[in-house]
Image (cartoon, rainbow, N blue to C red):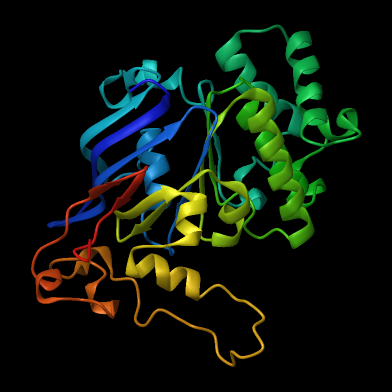
Length: 320
């Protein structure tokens, strides 16, 4: 559909362990508008990172994409050859991986790690690559790019390493940037700087972004649309403003209620009872029903379908 940079339809990804087939992504449907940010929210183990790896066809063994479509810039990524897919990863789709402390190669200088992507996809000369790499380091906020270019990752702080990862991810001017928990383990001040940098890059380079996080507060001020994941399923999708004004799914309401706020009349934090189920031991029916205060008999038997409520709002819940 025109206006969308990527559309994921009926995506299923599973892990095959011994005799078990463990579904980690189940009937996923989402799309991102050009130049917009979609925030993917959920607790640990909900399938956020596996969604990103499925898009890039980097699902680790014994995992496998079972079926579905991932249409990016008019091409179904799941039907491309490995060589065709390699020309898209790092080039048309950039990825900022989790954990800046470990994502960079510790024995290779920063400049070489940025240059590698440019050499692989652009075939530039060493001189051209160096100039572009220095410009990228400057663009992501380094006032002394020449110094950083020859340093090793261990000589940089966590926030500085994250900036290097962003420089690598945007080096080929991708049209889609996937950011997987890009501010995890960073202090509040550094987190604000990284978010400001990403927002500026989106606006100046007209990139689209899939922003994976467990932090609702970040999405409230950063995203355009939001998707809520649970046990490998998308439970709700909505424009950010509408979502925070009126969350619909009981799980979404629970997430918002659990955000820490300094309210003088509240003595205890609100929490969602229970735990996210193991993907190998999912309950029948709606996967959230054991933790839901609104669960009905049908919720315990049949899994609800994703429903279009109009105005870019989707929900997987029998209440609607």
